[in-house]
Length: 409
Ligand SMILES: Cc1ncc(COP(=O)(O)O)c(C=O)c1O
Image (tube, rainbow, N blue to C red):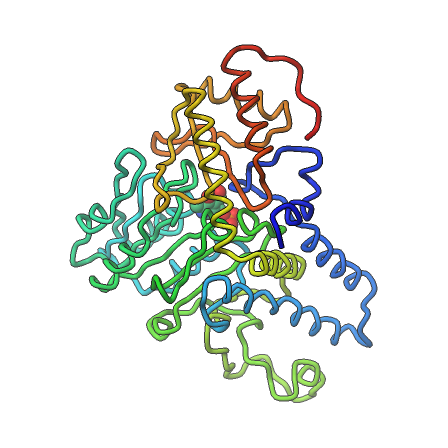
């Protein structure tokens, strides 16, 4: 699959310059078609019975698990399908045994959702939260180490920061956490899809990733990786039927058995599925996620990372030419697909974003902990022309030569 044919998978690009996969991305035709097919099933019940239709839907949903596992080099039974990154992080916060006085480290520039579950544990259970400072936008592993006391139990961190795209040295943080016996919970939503993560090479205890940003899936489905060798130490959450072992003969037969009773000793599945708390699920979300993951696996994650990197380089070179300050670190190991820049003041940045949006160049304005600006996401479906249009409209804004919006790309 070459990148121009990948681009054709995204019809939105015929009418706009979409550089905002870090927000809510656009879905490829294959994912939309898979969801359409599912909706046909929902409308017509193509199986001989509604029970068999339900079972078929569960199987279609399950196809996302091995694909997610392949994406990060995990085992299928280490993957739970979840609604979102937030839900994955919330599950991790409930599953790791923590007591009053235990310390959890969170970094200063994080997206709020990374902190929310632990803020609740601070208020309810008396855990202590320590905030790791950033240094000119960078998070240094030494700063995590400096805040680790003998009560430190867990680090929760985004591998790529949402507002300015700094990519952490995950390997070094993983080594530190293992050395100190500290749980490592990673939010990978701003990285996976742009730059691969291999959980065999870089061990972590949890990885949560929603589908709707860099994985280009439709809504309401992502995945949570849970490292198999740590599962015995966890407290699984309250679970529904998804986590119950399928009875002998299957669910169809089970529900037709007169003697069944709801109160009994349930056997729960082993593995990460035990952490799927729901019942009848978000089927279209999972089916769309599976289709999007297939696209990434077929295109090759390393090739995509190269493409994303090259686009980011071109964008930064163009911004340099315009004399614009880039907030994202430039080293390859320190960024993924996000490039954030600033015109010097929040007001100028906001005016530029308005100017770009009026020209159907989609980017976002994002800040946290004093860092941020105009956030651009360069992804697998973008090309040099997209970067060119962004730079041209930005240069025009800077020069004050604002004409009428350009025609559709
Ligand atoms: C780093 C990070 N984590 C979590 C989220 C929220 O993701 P979700 O909607 O999948 O919970 C975002 C969204 O902006 C994010 O940037």
